[in-house]
Image (tube, rainbow, N blue to C red; front, side):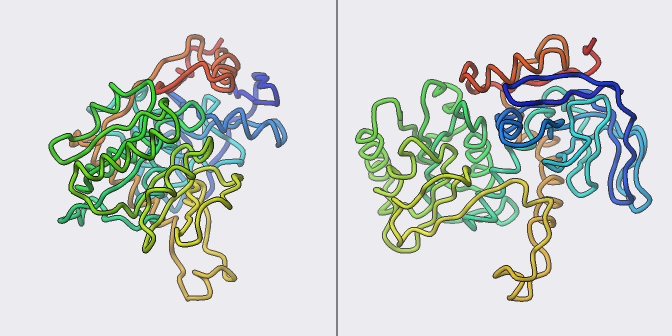
Length: 356
């Protein structure tokens, strides 16, 4: 099969390699479309060259002996385990059973192929880290929520947009969406009738802080205790810190390497890392010492299947995307565009069969 290897630069080379085989708990997927994310060029900058693609949309080719939910020929989407071999920048990819889900007939491969990394990151941040009500136990009273980077920033595309969609699915309002030039897109996500509003971060930090405070007043909210920071740099968390309540506040951040020492101690910081859906709870962690045996793996299993239902019912819809010409031959240019900030609020996807 053809496989693309991403190296520092980014530089991409395409190789002929054997088709991989799934282990007992994995599936082998013929990749129809693969998505891309900023980490696909970032990680090769500091790690060995590898197939860094993780968003898969395709057809089951083979399953491991423990897999009962899928069979050959099933239309699926899947989230490949980051930093492991056999990613989505190839004709065939490997995914774990628990991070694979059936693709509804009303959803095309290209629509969903590039959004699993972003949507699961948003779900982890909203529900596992902030502890907000899940869609099946929706909020019955107002819960103000700040989503900073709601349109999808260049560095962290669509995480904020999916957070807004999930908030609405959980009846979490008012949503204070901090966004930039893609405000028309954010407008299509929020519900003004429930107090949701948009604050323009291009007006500067002071305007952002005052805009959030004004939005809270207009919505009749006394305070805000929850924030999903989909930017996590350029003063985003500093601005948020100035408006969060001084008791019981939480902020979740999506860049693990940031210096967040400026956040006051009274605000609980949570790190949102999508890779946790492939990790076991360590015995020496606080959860492990408390006797907790399950966690993010089970969360990922449940929410990926909820995404399938949401796509089928229409309350979860894919965001704007662009099919890159040439399949994997267009990968290097696409990743370079992501690195140089030449794309915003649009997802790059690759039709693998177009690869020469």
